[in-house]
Length: 120
Image (cartoon, rainbow, N blue to C red; front, side, top):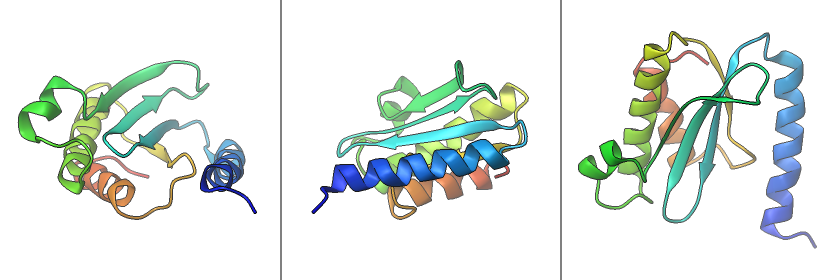
């Protein structure tokens, strides 16, 4: 029987394969979550350099939310990553959830980024 970490890695590989085939030259919005924090970064088309990044460890987020592991913090990170992307001239991205299920904090971050102008 596989552990939850092994199952996430399988989902991650499957999703990255699909993204690589259908991204059409768009940047990638990568999300990673832990129990205490959530991280979002925008990678360029090659995937080798970070264009923008925001996490619950950032000063801007810490001023707004007290706990980094809840839905309020995820919504704040989504809002700030969308603002950072639009400032860099990036409007369309591909959403990469890194094998995490599209539920809870990951879903809220994505919806918040969409509401603030990112298209994916």
